[in-house]
Image (tube, rainbow, N blue to C red):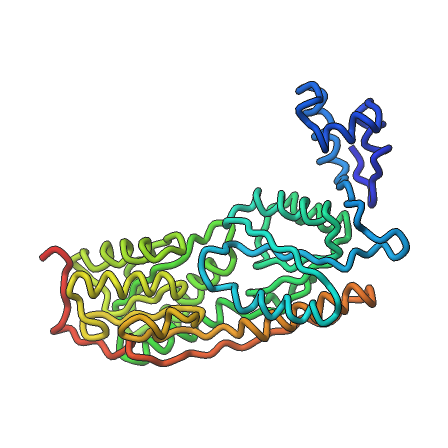
Length: 347
């Protein structure tokens, strides 16, 4: 079935061989449509790329002065200040923000993209560049203005306001190596469908490979971004015979979980093992010892993403992407290796 640039309800009705009233009913009251007919209509809607538009969209300008943002999670603070700055910048331009979360699930992100556009969003802020093919095709077909944040790809046609995760993780691993660590492990976020987590793993691997001199990445454990999962991963790493002298974590929540578990099991940080994080959210300075981590410029990214999206919406021309630099915040959780202090959990 040939996709149309802007399919109408009449196009869907014709392709599904039903009336426009049935199409409307399948969208608003699907329980009133026969299952076989409903499935046929949904298949046509998906194949044509049709999205019903909210009645709130201005007929004169075809603009609703509303934009959407889909973040992976609202469960912790890693996106909070960036999203706040994004909203503040939009507010000064009289634009309303609708927020949804994907739960790090590509199919749910696709559903949220469709929902926000259905409810009249003129453009979107998305996190990361890795998403399902059908999501990419939907955005391209509907010509939805988008800004991608929390990552940056210089060779991509997409519009970015973000940073290079590979480079940032490479920099942190290089600093850990410079402190004398050679046996290193990593507690990373789940990399499937998450280019930020995947590129942080790649950055650490590349830094260790480039450094040589006997440096090894002993283990990489991928975990959900939850403090308890960070603690469990820490226990697994430190229970092994060949325990690391430094653990590089994919974000501050995982690192905080590792630090808390270390204190619970009597492992001294950084004497027995150093721990580093990524993001520099508030928890980085409230855990003890305070966390050495990568500071992500969340607020500046949020403001810039809003400005880029507003420019894209007002001029219909694509501005240049913006790359931000990250910064390592040195605190007490990172020190030189002290092999005499090595400690195996459970011994």
